[in-house]
Length: 334
Image 1 (cartoon, helix red, strand yellow):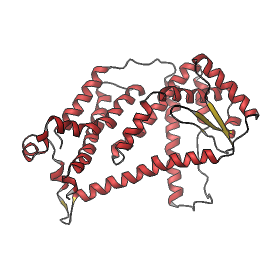
Image 2 (tube, rainbow, N blue to C red; image 1 turned 180 degrees about the vertical axis):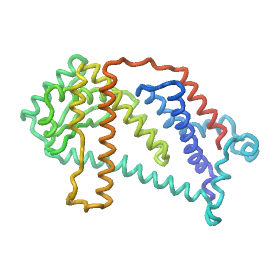
Image 3 (cartoon, rainbow, N blue to C red; image 1 turned 120 degrees about the vertical axis):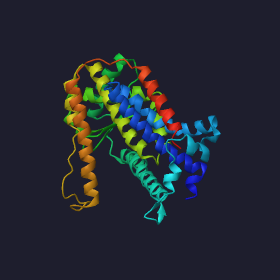
């Protein structure tokens, strides 16, 4: 296909290959350097999001002849164009399947990352909110002030919504608002509510810099890349583990956070009116609920195993060696 041989086609192809290389080398580094803490994993996995974006243009500026046939034949370890030009069962080139896969992951990105943002925004705006004079408001104010005062930070805005499911999330990057359901407020006791809200406050503290917007930007730039989809999800999970650990260090009550997390388990009811038994919608909901519960299981297990064990120092030498190896290997893959 002609597109694969254009600059844009080469960029897309090589960015995907470089992301796979980064993924493999990062996973190997976890075992080679005995890296187990989620803060370090969080930083390593950012390499798989960021480096594939910049490697191709950087290589082209440093070595313009890198894309020549001579380099591909004599120096490169892998020539993607030769493989993508191969025809499947002698009918159409492999590039058709490759671009079809990237198109599918692009659509998946829209469904998983773009639609939920607008859907969640509409849901929070359309939900019935309680007036500020409600008893829920006094409880939220008291707990949030108790959390924020020692941290010398301003109490964030919050909104209590009428919802039968446990809901707790934070909106905004700079000006944050906590959205919480009345169901969750009725379910959690004071210690559990304090742990849950402290977790949200920690998210605010960590996302107040450019870190969180930058990660989302990297994911959006690599919207077609299957590796970016996987690693972005892993980074989000690492962020949850990190915030759990910081929450426990602030509250000193790991059991309260574990109990609060247990309130978020979700099991879809069979025979819902909007989904027939065995339908694609119901299957999707079951898979998502199972995945959601597995993450909760892992978070709770982590809290039970590593209570106040301290944060290991980040080792820059293995990190730089891993980044350098990714760049060197990527240079030889065209």
